[in-house]
Image 1 (spheres, helix red, strand yellow):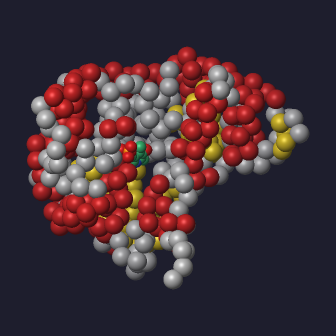
Image 2: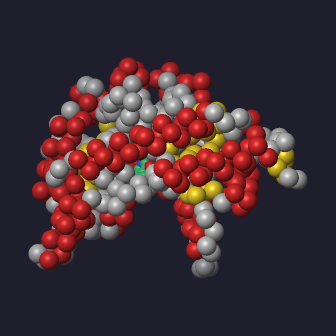
Image 3: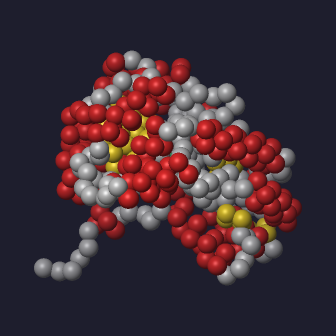
Length: 399
Ligand SMILES: *Cc1c(COP(=O)(O)O)cnc(C)c1O
């Protein structure tokens, strides 16, 4: 016997976005005027009607265990939302409600992967996908959506990455970190490959409500019956309803997969928080005007930030159409000197910018794009303006 630890656990990288946010918070606590572009969450408070529903739940004693995969009333509300917003028909037996969207995704990989199964992940990707796949004993296979391709992968690239071990493709639209949205035509081509080669599509649609410039979110599962059967549609209320702390996410899949996920969840965590489920019920069934307002505000910030970045030297970016991030190519700063330091990576850039200009941005090596940074516009316009001014100053110092 020995006191060794799990090799699998040791192979996991801690989330670098959370690390940067933590460092910025620490600087703030020391009275430094930090601008935080790192945050992956809305700055808005959860709308009042949703909070009231939670308070009512507590007062009414809705504080006990619920069914492990969530209450039937919430599953019904989720089905209704899928039908009206996504054009997707699901029954409550196909829905699993989890402790946040991340937990839902992690359940999905646990339910479908056997050791050695490959999961195709398009880069730039949300940094948790490869780690989650590894935790579920799968093998991440990375393909790249270059800047020239609008950071999106083509059906052809996916086809070329398929092997006899391919079990699934992860699709994230609107995308974190790029803000890109797949069009119906692109999704149709990808769906055709998934059906032909017979693998699952894990469709992460966490930002489905946050689309701008006339763009509309399309769920790949809604395209036809064959792709519907192979898709696990994943979403949640964290981003759309400013409910990150409540920890409610959900998935829609075949009844068979839902049963597996429910069974695992019944042993791992039991039900998601009962009070948060009542709050989510109100979020989905209640008035949607707050969502519209938040979306409108995000859109204004998006336009402002994108325009500022476009007018800066050494930076280049594609207009984001969804989520709340601007994804910036900073490769033109590599080899430039700031004081005595030569910038060679996005991490160097982010480090100097945080230490000397008190602005937190996310270097994207962990998102599969080492020469890009991600800026979130989920902060106030005043803060964005201040951060953009500092960015301009910083760039002017590079020689
Ligand atoms: C934030 C996020 C999630 C999950 O959010 P939770 O806080 O776990 O509900 C899932 N996918 C992407 C791409 C995200 O950015």
